[in-house]
Image 1 (cartoon, rainbow, N blue to C red):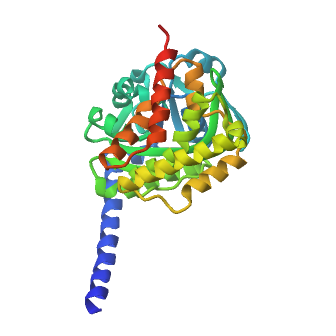
Image 2 (cartoon, rainbow, N blue to C red; image 1 turned 120 degrees about the horizontal axis):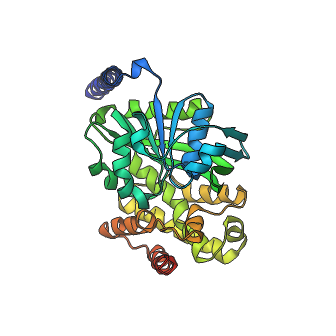
Image 3 (cartoon, rainbow, N blue to C red; image 1 turned 180 degrees about the horizontal axis):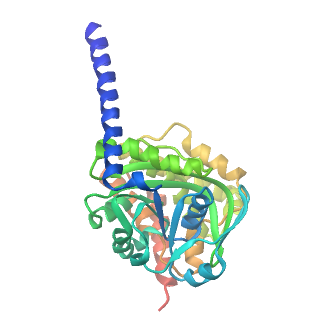
Length: 349
């Protein structure tokens, strides 16, 4: 008994000392990169529905936000960015927009709103726009996205994952429609001070919270990514395969049964890989979707506009990891194979 209490006390003291050390290191990092001389400068790379929404909310809160755009650059320069939000109301702002990363000021935080399918092309732009010690947040779906991007980043850069729970889409160039939800949860992946990841994640969550966005620190990024797959795997894929948005999918007994079976396979795959999801988590997401307004998932919009589907991160990587752990996910594999055929047939010649 004495040994237990002694070790518990030592553990508490060690944890407290480590937290103080982390805070000191973060403050030192701020001083080294000049953070004391200006508020955090935030860059948005991929200013579509996701990047545009969170970037606008941060800009509205008074943060120094810089948007890197491609095809929408001219429209945003002429008319600004507009948000039609069922939660926050209408918002229209003139923003700091750029067509080249070389023209952007060095950013302390970089939010990556583009799809994982473009990470290879985005990597040089991210590095170019990053201040020393920059924090890069991947607001992307699926598994393996951080591992894919990490080798292309400088060693001084921190990499975080961002899990967005939101119903949002792009209506027109520079025009975003926000239907429901909006939380973004953060987890630390890698960087020069991994023992200080908690402090950096809390700092990032604080930025979103200051902008009126619910944001939590996730102690286990891998677990959080599997949790997000519980929704993404069925609804994204079935929106393309069946040509149906969430309300019709939830109104039919056959598709409801299929959704729940796909969710159960994700939960089983996660457990096989060492990530046990909370009891009842899949049913919770199922019930949340029943209460949501009718929504077309992002994969449907990619399919309609003949853009590459995020099949690698949302389907192929989870299937490979589960298979390596001895777990079969036959319904997900069938969905992936069908989507692969649709995707390859849908690409412009």
